[in-house]
Image 1 (cartoon, rainbow, N blue to C red):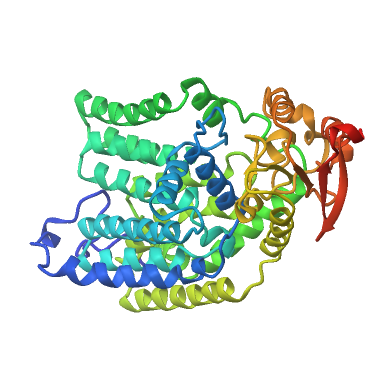
Image 2 (cartoon, rainbow, N blue to C red):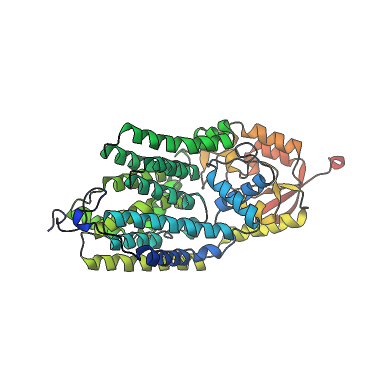
Length: 494
């Protein structure tokens, strides 16, 4: 049995190929490979075009973008617990193509996945061989859809974060430390957990014995874009909403069993998607050292990012796929060639399974949101503001009606998220100061229609006294698919 990698193989520990493996680049390598990767990226994202929306995050971003287009200010009158990069992307896409469809964002997601695959290809090719580069890009794209379609096919934060994380490793591999810092900042500004890529970057800085000037370049590269984003919005609001204001949300307390089951389920789903990736990694771990400590650090830091917040939503797991693809590619360099064919075949079969899931599975929550949106649209005028009390902000976008509050879900006002039950759901667990602002918004311009879309959830009006008092000025007019629509009672009838 092997105990170490044979010295004649092109794989080496570290971030450079052996001298015998260095050679002039193949003249047509990228010209031939990029179109194939682009075709594969398009094929793997075909289900994304099957529905107008995939999950509430897309709906939240779409509503935010409309609010920003109509004069809203991020982290003041438009709020979320996320950094600004993806909301700005949605706003820009709506400004160019209109806000009636997310198709331009679907195309942007394809470009993001292709960009990630190309960067991983370049990293693997530089470290090992031309074939290794192709392997890394293909394995990544095949595994990239390996989650519940509402997580893998949506054009949301993680998809647009991944190219930045791959770019950070690409730049660090080439000792371009200033741009490496910019890429780390880009990952953080797409989603906070993207900043986890700083750990492998720091390792490469330390291992390479980088002088202080390189460390400074990297630090400045990280700091300047983040500072610019804070100044472009509201610095205090930026700090609160992206860093300090989510203490109650980032807690394991409440529905621990439910959350644990979700985490294990999503991990199992991703393991199926990585049926071609995991076996080579495990086999090489048994036979030899794989080297490339920075790739293991990248995977470990990404795993910690998945755990952060203790919610374990499926889309969090997307962050694991790029380092897994590179580690599998590294492992395949010291395994017989038939292992590569097995890995590609298993990955292709898993990918086909998830694509079929995306194309054929019903979307009951989307159907519900569309039914409610149709009722809201029919009972309001275009200029009327409405309040949807629930966890489906996409209803505003589908109904083409403006929200009556900056708080687009009941989660920000009750700490409910992802099925959390028990003692940590209610007004006292809301974002600090949210209820005072919420009451002022509704007192200044009362919504024409309020939709109670709780459907028995822990944040239902009976358990939220402030909302119950607000509903006292409204009367029920219709029930739609479990949601209750309330219309404001005229002043003279109260």
